[in-house]
Structures are given as C-alpha cells and as structure tokens.
Amino acid sequence: MSNINLIIEERAADIGNFLVGRLLPFRQKRMVGPFIYIDHMGPVKMNERQNFDILPHPHIGLSTLTFLFEGSIMHRDSLGNEVEIKPGEVNWMTAGKGIVHSERTPEYLRHSEKNMHGLQIWVALPKHLEQMNPEFFHIDSSEIPSWKEDDVEFKLVAGEAFGKKSKVPVYSPMYMIEIKSVTEKKLNIGQHLYGEAGLYIMEGGIENDGSKYGPKQILVAKNSSLCEFTIKPNSTIYIFGGEAYPEERFIDWNFVSSNPELIEQAKQNWTEQKFDKIKGETEFVPLPVYPKLKN
Image (cartoon, rainbow, N blue to C red; front, side, top):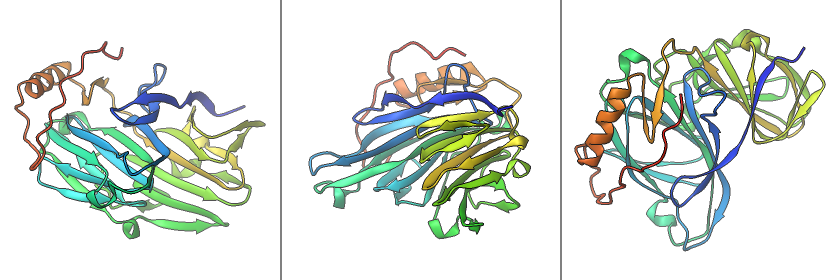
C-alpha cells in the first residue's frame, strides 16, 4: 500500500515582478510540520534589463529560509543586515514580532545577464515565540552537514535528522534534507524522520509502490516513519517536515500567527508605517486588498 497521502502540484504565482511555482499553502494541506509556505523560484534567465526586485515588505510570526541553486540575491533588513545570498548558502531570518526586508539582484549584476533558481520557504514559529525579537543568521555552504551513502548525496539544509544537526537555528523539531543521486537507488529513510513529512521532486523522479512521480510535485506521506521509495537516475529531491503545532496557524499576506488579532494589528501597523525601516530603502508596498485564504 502506498504511503502517499496527498500530491500537491506546483502552481504559478506572481510575487511582484517575478513568477514562481507555489507549493504551500495548499487548500487541502495548509502546512507540513511547521512549514507553511514554499515557493520554487525559476529556473529563469534574465537579461541585462531584468532584475529580481522584491521591495521592502514586513513579516511576523515566522522564519524565512532562502536556498539558492543559481543566481544571487542581496538581502537587506530593518535590523541593519546587508548580505548577499549565493547558491548553497542558507539565509535564515526570524521575524518574530516584526521585521522588514527586501530582496534584490546585487548591484554588480544588475546590468548583465543572470540566472535565478531557488526555494523561498516560511517556517511558522511556535506559539510561545511568535512575538520574539527578530533575528537574522547567514550560514555558509561549507557549514551545512553533507555526506554520501551508497553513492547517494545527502545535505541537511536545516533542522535535525540522520543523527546530525544543521547550524541553522530553528525553533521547533524540523528538517529539510537534500538528496541527490546519479543512479537508481532504493531508499528507506523513515527511521530518520519524525512528525509530518513531504517530498519535493526538484528534478528527475521517484517510484513508490509501482507508481512513478516527476518534477514539481510534493508528495505528502501518510506516515513519515514509513518513508521508502526508489530515486531515479539524475534526481534531486527535498524531504521537509517535522512536528506539527497543536494550534491552527492563520496567514494573511506576509503575516503568520496563531492569533488573528496579531495579524490585524500588524496590517494596521504596516499601513501606518510603524514598522522599522531598512536603511537606504524608501519604497513602500501598500497592504494588498484580496480575499483572505480560508483556514
């Protein structure tokens, strides 16, 4: 019997001047463990007149995880951080009670051809930390646990699994694991997982209980401890998940909270421009008006 409970297809979404593939949230599955939002950016090639520009915008109640495969993003935030994100590095920003950040093509690349490809992820904070002070951490690619087993390459991008721990300072039991293989291999990794688990196929494919699955899909497991599948040649997949929270999470624009009143207050604060500013950034994105996602 297949251990796949739900298949989520990547859907197109507009995040300003850039189209992405939206994976979470999904109407039938709002979260997988603490993961509440996953966008697949690209792959896209931009010419010398095109740039990646996400204007200053706010967050509360979550941590953002940016993980690039190609390209470069300049991160700036209201804590004063200004850091270039390059492929293989992890950008981990915790909004807590409130933070503002922008994401742009670095100045030295703005007038040349460039590629962009990566994942943008939100991880909801535990209820008791939703109003914590904002934080920012940048983890170099050399600091991310990587290993090989039977010609299969593993990388623990964030969290704890396989008896290893990433330097990304997560706030609840969770994991994000990259798995790559150039040959066909049967994997049984359920004993290393816990909580809820999703499998995202970036390239290549997997086979499970006689069924084959290809790129741009999340396969949500019925039971993470029974995670067994065959990875096809030249495939890259991501396993993500962890312990689910007991409370419901609400999401409205860039705000996440277990308390809808905190979201309404954040919306008011943003409209009245009460959030801290980013040094050198003057553009303002008005609060969008659109129907709330149903919970």
